[in-house]
Image: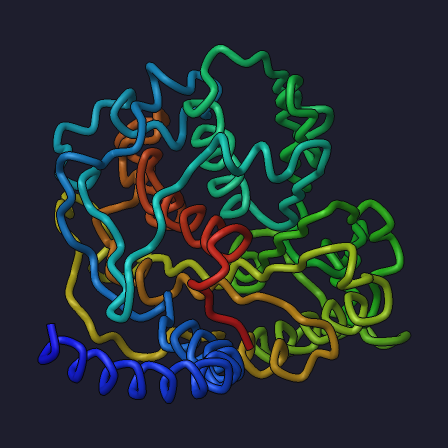
Length: 362
């Protein structure tokens, strides 16, 4: 007992000293922890990664069985695509893992809210994917799916009062039709964009700027109408006009703004026909990405950038190809099969909106 008593007094003195330091230690940890958390968050760039096979978990759904509202052109299996390996890939960022998409948590978080996609048919791809991911989470929950016009589609979860909206707008600036000149893109005008409203706005524009077709396209700045303007320069001007509209008209405390980024197409010499596996990186910088980065980085408003370009550059196997339901003479190497790559874009969206830690923004 005497020996134990001597040891106890020594330990008591040590314990008293440590207890004296303890409050200061907690203060130090409290001050440092947010910084450590911030640094950790910034380490994970979701745009840098690779596609890995995740056979037990992917695909996230069967389009025909689980989501009959998916349009024919995106439902590659129903259109006769024979291979299925393309369904089993998961995007793996180098610095982290994307959180699993929790549709119930998403709907609860955005109860009574509106999420609006604004863009071309690539936005439609992502919008239909999100509607499906949420539907399979609450398959017994009633919903309405309405295409009010060719430019406005709404998917509504009635019990949650959540609306997922797609506004078809390929340029994000005003356009008019002229009998002689064809389509005129007003690069300095977004005067008609009163219809852009929601708690989350997800914008996309790229492909229409570089389409080559029979319909002539003119560009207008002020009163000057130009036919021979460089498409890349026109895209930069139009995107800058959109960014100025966002800075002037959107309250970032009420609305989250996201730019979907550029989805790579594989039209050209190689095409996407009979491609069954992803390619490997790295890849050269895709045209237009530097413009997006420059415009977004100069905005006053906080805009999240879902940089999906590299992951889509690698997914030459993810397009409908000739399995669009329009016959084998038509090959689509721009849009994406569902299930497929757009589900990953929505996993990234989930990470930005609900994941807290995992995001990449300018």
